Length: 217
Ligand code: GTB
Image (cartoon, rainbow, N blue to C red; front, side, top):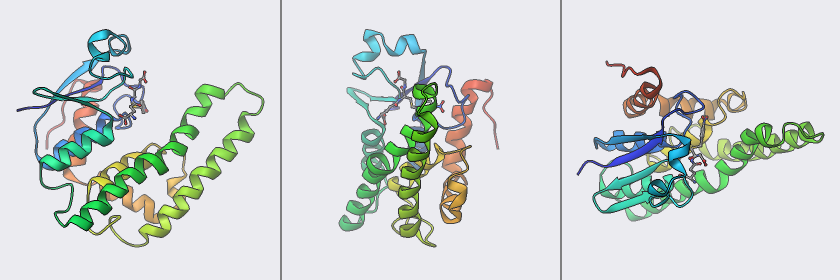
């Protein structure tokens, strides 16, 4: 059964892979699962039909027959459990990959999102600049730690997994800040993720929502 995901009709980033449907698209592409996309306006996301799927009125959602899911971590985990390619078969390695999925979403993503959103939420406050420096320091603490752990490995725990998929999308949210560039191994790690054919297909599909053209080749 072909799953259907939801995505922004008009993403503020104009389809640069930053909205969270990118993670789900990438996971589906990695496992070779075709999918349909239902595009939603901001108004439609808050209407009862969508709230029945997503209690917080957000994208993405994932529908597959009777099953309806929200939260990208849960969706990517579901895809990874149902198809080979995103989680190792060895039980311990699988548990470690799951640990990296949680680390990406619970430990690394929150300070990054806070830093990214502060200018919109608090940019007019007199203490904004001072707080922004503090938020950036918090992000750098996490990246220092992540960079140390990654070292010169290609991926976080041997083979590429759903943990790397989520971590790369989380780090990509710092695009334009110049922060990841201060960590050459993390920069290379993100570039390795972006170079994967499945990533490129997912990115092209998300961008095509804006350009109206799906690049081929
Ligand atoms: N924890 C949830 C998950 O992981 O699924 C978070 C889902 C979420 O934040 N969805 C956002 C949303 O629907 C879109 S991804 N926001 C609308 C709302 O809450 O009303 C966040 C996002 C949006 C846009 C950009 N961008 O354009 O750069 C980047 C990230």
